[in-house]
Length: 519
Image 1 (cartoon, one colour):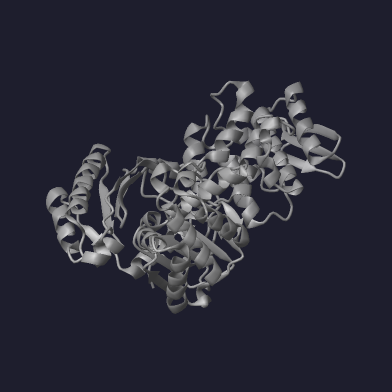
Image 2 (tube, rainbow, N blue to C red):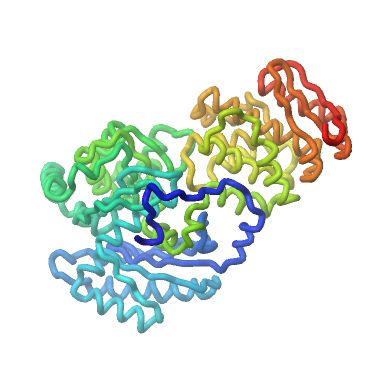
């Protein structure tokens, strides 16, 4: 069994605690991957080889290695030259950024081309970098691992559409399923099919899917991966004016995804290029992405589509982590990686996690992880002007590149921090995003934020003072019990913060009670 795959029956620790020492992993050197694809060669430099990697640098060179490959069986001389030049530049950038490990992968084009090994040898000679040519099975597996790494316990079918091929596999919570296929339905071959007419392209794609894609791979959720499908998601977010314009975790009903894909296929090239959200470099291949998505969804018949910004590169990164690190929660790791170094007292966030643990009765693990993430981010804006903290934090967190989170969870975290900075519940900038939360979730975010606001005010951000107090929520009042030894102030400002919490909970009365030690 591989280190990234465990039997479901195994008991696996999934820690939700904060550890101020773990953000020290930022001292790890940057890690980089070069992905030699059929259409482009891309370098991504991540801040570290860790559970919540943040891209520090991202650049691609459009080499179109698969262009003409079907006719000649080889990468043409121009594409060959551009690929070597791109690797030479990327090696120089990585060296300048202090990257200690740079992995290079090759996929469909270099795998199929008769001169693929020669290209790998030329790259090695020019840069000293070894190209790992992935099999179709490895490509499918790493793409699915990217989804495993990027969502909270995902179960679904993963489709990774590259320039030359389409890989489909299963993400099953913490591992990749046994079923997978690699199909010649990348952007370039589908683009060639569309040149013969939409009806003919549909017929040929359906024929390939019918012969090679078993319906058993279908699950209620389909996770599209790849630049073309990300561009489609961006275009849809612009078309409907989505309240949260972040691709990762963007969710559509299958019927809506198919209808939008079909609408793109009806656009002329000029109108497609002018479509909001469609990058100029993607306009040419977006019809191919739309056609492939429509036909795959018809074949697999999932209930909904959840777009993933993470794929093969992140799956390869994730596969190299120790098992214990793989099972760290990516949202919590990202939140503390960002939040704790910015905090005045990093140790206060873990104390908040403990202090708020009994705030909500019947809290589920999914709810607990959001609470812990909010605690990690609770002091990110202390340097900002006080009148900007609530609004700016909300806007920033709404768009921050967290993983392991969907759009409604993202709004919850942002709304809770907004409340922590005394933001008004009716503030106009909360809309329309706040509409993604149910009334119960909106109330929960408000209560959590107000409780954290109170905690900072009465304790001064000192963990030992916080530990000497606790909240009691009665049916008709909220009580803050403070140990006498803690010397926490019973001030007017603390009383006002307690009243804000009481209002969020929905009770009128609040009281501060000083208790004796051991009481």
